Image 1 (cartoon, rainbow, N blue to C red):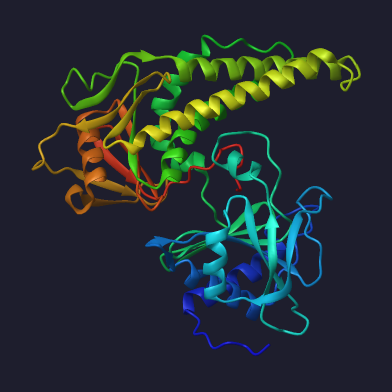
Image 2 (image 1 turned 135 degrees about the vertical axis):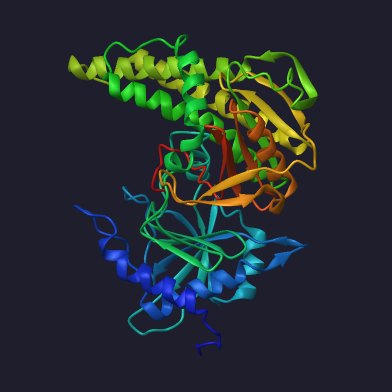
Length: 443
């Protein structure tokens, strides 16, 4: 097949070179990375993916996942010998922008990958072999709706989820991203760092809820304590991710226990719940108690050398735990869906839901200085004016300038998420925060 003419962006070429050079040394220890195309093929893969991500279908930008495997090879999951279900075409298709656009419309990037085949020994351009069935568990877990998932294939995987935005995975590890002409290779940000400004609000809420959670007997303190913290933050992230998936934008105002935004007339809630409901809080407490009960039973059996597979109590707690996790995820999705109404969601940090359709009631002429955070835990902040932002961000900045007892997640229609908070009287703003399940730090 003759090589089609395509003009490479210099930054895409640099991006491909950096990914290729890091590939063999990204993960240390007893680990073998999946195969990778040669540099020319990799540049072509990235360039076509980048240009295809700019395409639209019915006025909407397309998104897709590509899994790139060696010619005639079977595609297996990471950490297992499971061969993924593939649907190969009778004849390979040309790997180009038009074919990716057509196939993206027929596939869900979270459950189906377009399977790309390459042969770097003869230096031919990659071709489309068919489709690959990934299943939904990885995406579900990544969005903080679950803790149990099947890992990604042992391939180089390329995910394009918004225009000009490329995420590259080495098997199950996020190795690089390309966005707005900028490359990040081997230095992926962690969700926990992006959320530093929210942690005082998180800790207050978590400490309040912990009073109703049963302390494990057999599990190590550090293990269960850390998991409780992870699970609490993931509840917030699950709501934000549901808002992001909806692609209509919105805001989540997370308030402290003593917050009085309503009394101060800083917000007006169009759909205020008669009494802040405990549904989400109760689901979280049930999930945590069942998780602790299950792990405690597991550790007891291991410590006493009892056959785990034959233990009926462990089987029962496992079943109950999965149901509790599902219920918690459904409650998060229920609340996240309410962001489709015009206005913000308001949630107390003890997970009591106050209402939706909230309007921030501040003088429109009032401007606020805000400090943009590029690197968390750094003192190098650039000062900006709030008026240069869009309406949702301006409202969030103004509210935080008047209250230090709330943090606000702002979700744009394109799926990007920002965090706004007040620290010692100054308003800080972090764009493009990572909202991945923090139990999956390299995903």
